[in-house]
Image (cartoon, rainbow, N blue to C red; front, side, top):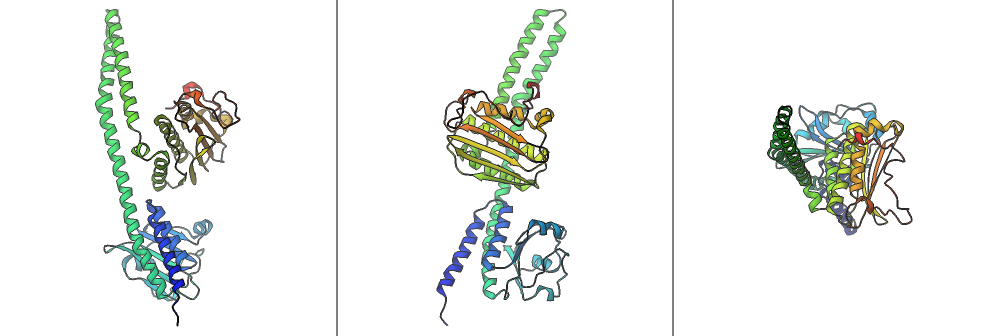
Length: 414
């Protein structure tokens, strides 16, 4: 019988593509989902799942492919480590079955669960530790020994990608802790002492006012000087908060990493879409990054969305940043309180400082869209820099007026 070399090459290409897809991700969740999707496509079966063991017989992560969101919701809670799932969490050997229902450890499944017949399970192992297990099901004709070999190969690469993703996440967490500690030290050393001096000098001015107005006036002059110095110190610390990724890699990479971090720690799916953009002036990049942070914080803290999308692009000489969520939104007709709570004035001010404009659109129950546009040019970030797309009349900042009432000056929330 003649060997099918073309089939071998196609299969090798498929494995290579799957491995490259897995190793392209640094987010643990993305790695897991890509492993599952790649495995199902590679072995041409109907369903695939991957579980990562948690504490007390639970799964810390459980992702699937081939099951719709509606089906997943109907199935109910994530399974525990029992039945065949429990076997693969404890035994490093693969399991290949013509009918999973005939295995002595089979314990059934919820009513809404699809019926599984052909089954192939493969532990994901690193140095003797079972990091997780892949489960494939329902392949017409059954899984073969060749399928088992392919899945073992993919699981080996998946283990390396999963370990790398975990190390990357831990390094990010350590960087955050180190940065917080540095900020705390700076605030204590540079600012708290100034504030303490301001308080003592102000109390002295109150005491001297009735009996020595000249000395009280001198004390107040000292208070003014110390307050100005404290403001400068705070400003210097804030400038120092510019993320290293923003300074080194650019706005697009910094936003991508920020969304990946938020996606891991929030129930909502947070995604970034965009590509490299021209480098902007430092002030403009900072303003866009801070606006994105504020909009993301608002959506995740106040709107309980299922999805939040961050988009970055260049259009007609402009850099366009959008943060869009499908959360609870708010009513533009009663936006005064929301403006204070959501920091809309702060975002508008940042957009102006970058020479651009901000647009916020929202409706109750219909989500919120935050859009900011700034020129691509490296001109200074004055409010007069806005030129807009070709054909658009130059005029005053219209920010969010079309969708949200402009808050009073007193509504600035920082």
